[in-house]
Length: 475
Ligand code: NCD
Ligand code: ZN
Ligand code: ZN
Image 1 (cartoon, helix red, strand yellow):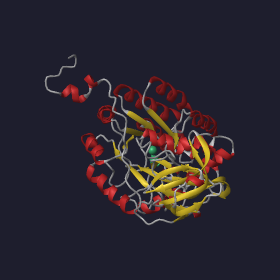
Image 2 (spheres, helix red, strand yellow):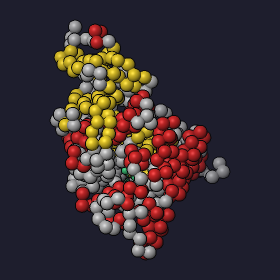
Image 3 (spheres, protein in one colour):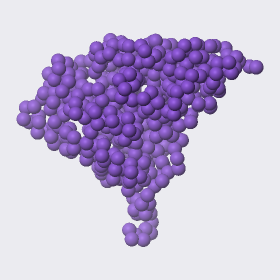
Image 4 (cartoon, helix red, strand yellow):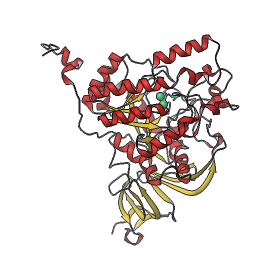
């Protein structure tokens, strides 16, 4: 028999539907057998896992790797190194780079950088902006994983499209069937409040949350869902931070809106109260980290499926941009792709989540939402051998100094975690081991979505239908 590339022996294989003791055979980057060690084919390489758990590699649908345009914050080499060390095998990069990913030309620019440097697989978002509605279809053909709509102002100051442009954008996306990830905050409200706070001399750490109080998120979520309901566009709510959004999420899902939702470890573990500690201003991000009372409802929603998945909003900045006396002067966001898996495994150790649920929220659910399931999202025959080997018994202390990201800032300095990724494989190649990168730059490949057929609604009222020659609104 011809030997296969690799067999991982003696691991405990974790999928969404259960955990089995099994070996995994890999050939040509795919999983070719799962089962008893004695049934495995001969292999060129054997790695003994000795009871370590193997999860499907995490898919982080929300990172900012900053290239092109902001290499002082991050690039595809440092960002993907951080991902690999963290057990993340696929990332989706956000379009608020310089230039923004708003045209095929700018998509190709980012693709070139990612291809030459990334060691993990990647999807690239296209921007949905008021100025580029005419580019959306070509971006789909070029291979975007989905689109990103910034309803609320944030890093990069991309202008929030008018509601008219958003509706027309959704009409177009509903026809394409790709998912639109949405930063759901109401821009006019947050600017109004921010300006009043500034005028009143408020520049303390809590002024940021005061400007972006809960209704800023709740209103934008419901507006986006209303337009998705009308058009049939598929949407994904990024960085859900607010317990008061949860009943509305349940309502829209029950109504049949094709909506998925992510939250972030920082909304589960951190609170606005912590911003009052020395250096607490580092937690400034959008949407803001809210009062501690939001944490328990968010944990419960992540466990019960109201929230579908965990992402990181990995948003590195230079250290000097993150600390200072006036909150308005500080950059928003901080790194996360490297620590998310350990924080979710710690939730398992704490009895908050089952290990199977971790496989869902880190891999299965993102793969399903963005048309990658089968190829990724599960440990099964025929799937890419994207694997995160974790040691549930190993503890570690999180610290900024240990990060591979260029943004050497930690929101979790000194936090103890229990359960850490120890080996990461992308399509059968080991890319990280014991916290160090072991792959050459450029192993990562673009992933393209394979979505269910589009399901557009209200087609007779779209701008395209109305402007068709001979059309009448009542016709
Ligand atoms: C993100 C960034 O820095 O790109 N910052 C943040 O506070 N979350 C942008 C974003 O996700 O809104
Ligand atoms: Zn955002
Ligand atoms: Zn983000």
